[in-house]
Image (cartoon, rainbow, N blue to C red; front, side, top):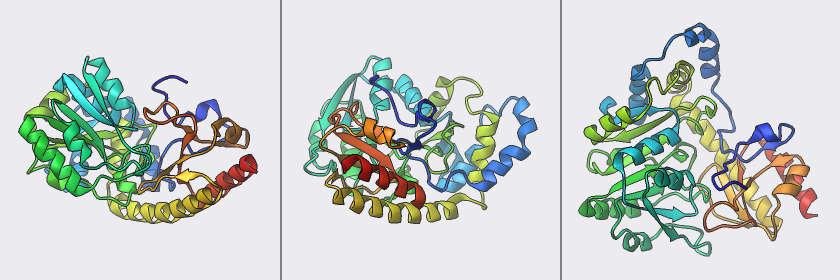
Length: 345
């Protein structure tokens, strides 16, 4: 397995139901699909390099000033730009976590330190993080974390921000999954915490993975200007901007996400109970996915049974017995549980 391999490799297994990518089970909002169909002729034009309409829509959606928003070609584009601009000497990540943080940091020669979270404690982030921050330039956190599904406590986040400010360090907070989780976003902290940078995307929350719509929220205007200059021209395509604006409008937006969260919470609990009942060690999750440990690697036999799950063996701190599954629609989840029944029988 390649070190930085991710989920969502459906094209390698088109016959299987894909539980390896954590997308909104309701799919793309109909208004976004309609906007793309109606606007296809505009795809021949260059996109607005500043993504003005999308930035305005994102600012309204997040309840922040438009000057605090930078649109990017997905969250990974934002992470790479941040590392290019910040050029940290030493960065801290909490394992297990999204490997894209380390990948972006290594590209700029940063030294990456790892805080190993405890499986016994359910991979919760606690006060040990504060001690681990000594001597760093950048701290990468996620709310909720991927692959554990654990949300970050507001008290812990505030303590990290205060410590980072005293040290002159930046906190990069990945909230790509927060809009489908039980947690809350942190954009209300931006004005009081200029060292906080939030990375988000419409990828997961509105199922726009193929269109690459990400963004940065931050109160440091100079940093956002540098981040904009660090990207390539026309980074966010015409269809990406078009679909993003539609998703954030009155025909989708927060109402669509409320329905999505209700579905995710209900189906996640059903899956958790069923997987635990099969003897699997399931980590408590507040997100749209579940991390669990089995007695062996189940990814190959589950694929033979028709479902694609995320093997977590290339997450630092985990191994081949750990897997992650997305919460999907009820009939899909029924098929997933049937496959587990076949494999574990």
